[in-house]
Every structure is written in C-alpha cells, then in structure tokens.
Image (tube, rainbow over all chains, first blue to last red; front, top):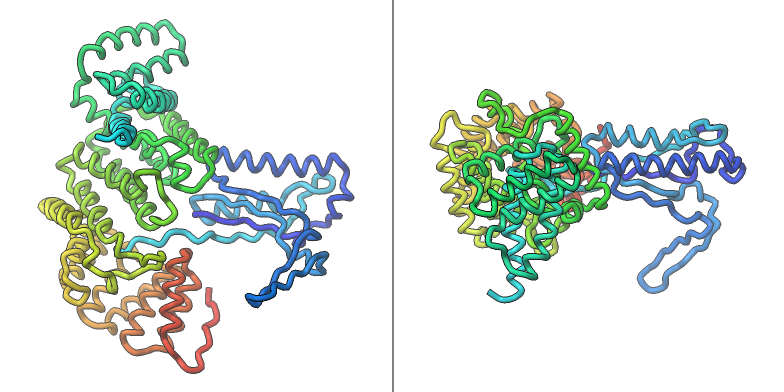
Length: 132
Length: 419
C-alpha cells in the first residue's frame, strides 16, 4: 500500500518559533533529521518519493473558465494551509504509515524539542482488486 | 531470425537459466546474498557478450563460471579457488544433472517465499532470483526508485540468511505449509500485474505474464500438486479476460458487461484443461475451487447463461475452506443469481453486522447492486456513493460513481459517513 504523508506550513502544534529564528545548529539538526529519515526509509525499502516545495510567497493560484485564466500572485493570507512538502511511502500496513508520520511529526525544532507538526496520512489510489 | 530477434532470444534464455545458475552456485558456496548478486552480474555480462559474440556452446556453464569467478573474487580464499578449478573442469565437459537443477529451482521458490519475509519483499526477490529480472526492471514495474528496490531486495536476502535456513527442499512434513506462501506470492504478483496493466509495464514481459511464466515453471517442477496446477489454471482463465476488462480509455468493465468475443479462447482452453486436471484430486483445494469458478465463467455463453448453481456450490466449498469474508461476499452474489436478491441481501447484512468487512467498499458495492436489482434505487444510490468514497482505486471509484450517477433519484442527498 502506498501512502502520501503531507505537511502544510501551519499545523505545528509544538510551541515553536519560525525556523529563521532558530540557531544554525538547530536548523542543521532539523535538516539532518529529515535526510536521515529518508535514508532510513530507503534502507527499509519503503521510500518512494519525497519533495519539499518552494515557499508559499512564490505560489500562484490559477482559476480559468477555459478562456481567460485568472492568476493570483502571493503572498496569501491563508499560506499556512498550503502544502509544504510530502513523502510517498510504500508499506505493508496502514499502521506502519501512521508510525512513519509520527516520526516526521516529531522532527527536532528549537532546543531539540519535537515540533509536533500535523501530518496528513492519505492512501494513494492503487490497482483494483481481481474479480473472483 | 532477424537481427532484432537476437537480443530477445538471449534475454529469454538468460531468464530461463537464471534460477538454475543460482541454484548451482548456491549449492556449492551457500551465501544466498552474495551468490544471488554474483549471478545477477553474470546475467548482465552474458546479455552483452552473447548478443555480440553469439551463444556459447554451454550457456548454463558459461553463467555458472562467470558467477563463480565473482564469488572467488569476493572470498579470495584458497578453498574457493580450489572449488572453482574443480568445478570449471566438470562443467566444461557436460551439463549439470537436470534432476538436481529442478530441485535447486524448487528450493529457490521456497527460499524466496520464506515465511519471515513481508510479501512485497518476497515478490521482488522472486522476480530477481527466479525471474532473472534486474533490480531496475523490478523497480520500474512497481514504480519505486531503484535504490528503494535494491534495499528491499538486499534486506530480504539478509532476512533469509539470518533465518539460518539451509539451501535445500523443505521437509516433506513442512511441504504443504511452505507451499502455501509460494502460491500466494505468485498469485499476488499476477494480481498486481493484472490489475494495473496500464501502469506496470515491465519491458517485454509484464508482471502478469511473468507470474504465469513462474506458475508454469512451478507446475513443471511439481506436476502432482493439484493446487499448483489450479493456480496456473486460475491465472490463465483470468488473463484470458484481460482485454475485455477495460475500455480503450482504461475504464473498468464488470464481468457481466464484458464482450465475451474478446476473451482469449486459447488461454480459456488451456486454463480449463488445467482446472479439470486439478479437480481430479480430492479434497478440492482453495485454488482448485477458484479455478473451477473461473472456468465456468469463461465457458459460459453469457452472464445470464452461466451455471450459477455450480458456482454457488463451489463458493460454498470455498467458504468452508477459507471462511474469508470476501469469499462470503462473492457467495452472496452467486446466491442472488440463483435465488434472487432478497436472500443475498440477508447474507450481506449478516456480513456487515459481523464487522468483518467494515470500511470495505466491496460490501457497499455488492449491496448497491442487489438493491438496484430489487428496484430500491434510492438506497442503491446511497450505497454506490458509499462504495465510491471507500474505494482505493481510481478506476473502481470512477465506475462506482458512474453507477451512482446513473440512478436518477429525485431529491437525493448523499448519506453522511458512518466510518
């Protein structure tokens, strides 16, 4: 089964300042954690894909009636709801997907304390079952 | 034979020889992990050398020698060198004993489907060790990065090494118990390929074809195991319907609406003969019952003219054997065809009350279909909507949504999710 583990800019439940106010060592520890987690998932044969997205200020919203697209540039007031990044993992059980999400959620923040980010766990659509 | 056929022929031969070469190296050196790597390297070397220079006189011996050189490099021990020389001498003259080769290949099946492995790992390992596919090909087929697949395979090999299991056929006493996961892994591979035939292209051979190939190999190795024969029959009878199962744009077509002129009659004939062979044994096995059901479908002139009574009695046998909720649900569908939707709905409601299929879209989809047959369109529509919301497959969800949309119910509002 494949799951997408999604994180938004908001949804951080820990008492945590924005990353630019952290010490360089704290930032480094956070980045190292993310890389180590990806390596670990790779070694377990579970890693499928993982991407971080460019900042929300660079985002654009596009709506079209099929004739004239309406493009809205940032910054957006609802930027906390935007997607920050995701991982796709392939696991044997739904429980394992939740377990990985819990690891991601507890990434180290200021003073090494877990940031407690909310992770959305969504199953990726798969092939249909056989008929018989 | 045209020039472009040469690589295909070499490829086919290599994949056929892969398990025998691995068996031979493993028999002499042990170390499943390294032996498997060494044979993979030999396969890669052979695929370019043989296309360029033509086939060697003894292709199997060539592969074993190449893999052995790699093993010797790895271990660099006097003993390994000595063995290599002994072996090189014996292989250059004649072929390996075919009976030993068969046992080795069979032992590899059991090893790759070791009960300590997660199924996804067993599938990958089987494709490499028995199918002769490269890690890259397997990764492409399953749409994961090559590094992930490489790790999955090497982890599986370490697990097997850690289990301390020797490279040999399992005890006759443990044989049935160990055969079950082998059959499951082959069938799972088939389903993966069959179900996702749009996404999972595997170069020349897709996963379903590969599963059938491995099924045939297993049937050759174990001709007296009725369940092995039955599994092969089931795969062929299902594969026969593949083209009719989706529209040109990939939308799902249910069995009842498939154009039976598009079923592959030669696969149906092969599968039906094998299914009959597997039914000669008693008691009837799980795959034998499934193959018999598939044969009845494939032999029927239409959905209505299908022998639903026999299908129902086969499902009754299957329920007794497996007590699987999915099988009980399928049995309810057969009950509806024989006795009408009312008794079938009673069975579905019992299943729902047991909680065994809680959250499954199948339960809702079957109930929707039965209610629709009864003319209970409003409830049927609600059930189709519930089924679509729970489906984890795009094509299936599209189909269920379409069914819901097709029921024109005035003032319909979707049900709230009960979870």
